[in-house]
Length: 185
Ligand code: SF4
Image (cartoon, rainbow, N blue to C red; front, side, top):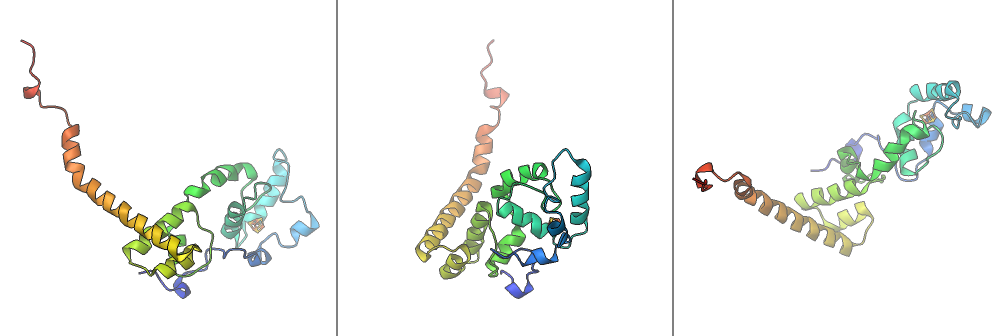
């Protein structure tokens, strides 16, 4: 069963929450030097200077998550330059972090990728969660939550059928025994 939200560590930023910024190691520094976290990529010393702040920052992961979730493509966030973050931006929709799935099911209002939303529906189906709860977690209508649960049920059924058919398929896929090949004389 999903844990109650009080037992989930606040590792994930709530949607729209910017309060973490006041705990950043760069607090104040960026005001003194607005370009500090937007250095030219070729200015290695400037890049290293910004990264030194990030290396000792208590909210580094939250900062990186916020940049990815807000699609902030420019500047240094969470200790990574825009070039270092590029692959993470591209692959974000495939992120499947079960810590986020658990936190969302417990009621935490966080950013979820499509892969995480699908995992939530599967978990809700397996645990026979209340459709209204699923609707609240995913911020969809009850009707849509019902459709998602029906789809999860169909997918589970297809998986069971596929698993049951696996021995047959692997048999069909094996080489025909030599004795049955009808060799030419
Ligand atoms: S990770 Fe870096 S950019 Fe983000 S808040 Fe911390 S010091 Fe600032």
